[in-house]
Image (cartoon, rainbow, N blue to C red; front, side):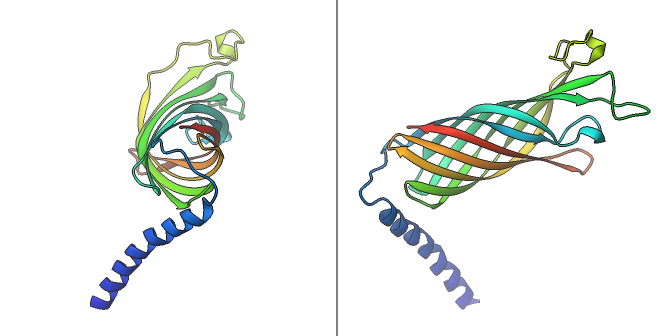
Length: 210
């Protein structure tokens, strides 16, 4: 037991030292910005886990948003994300076929916060992170029952709130000391009241500024 405790302690102390050494090697001749605050403009696509019937589950939607960050250390960053997403022409139910006169757009507002850990530091870096927060979703009727208007012409439903957990991985390429290009994969995990878990994988790209 004592040996195991000492091993865990040694590993805990070794990881930051290794990351710091790697940071030094990867940043020779290049100096990052000393500003700990960052703002990122991002956009991407996602698979909508809350389509309205089995025929359209996993419908592709699009999102855009802002992500703010604050560097606690060289490897640990506090982050917060706010985004809007929409999935168009998500079909409703039909008795005898997969098509229905009643079609819907799913609209999303998402706000999350959490931490990011830089595993591979440097001008080209790789980080993993975890966030949690809320996702608000509503449906806008947009089928032929709205007079043939397919752009969300009917009165939307009330916003429904979902708790969301977001594991993510980010590849970041520094373009200048104050600007970086990001590519991020995320999974928005939403448990419901019936014991089911809905997953919405997301791929986004962004431009980060300091």
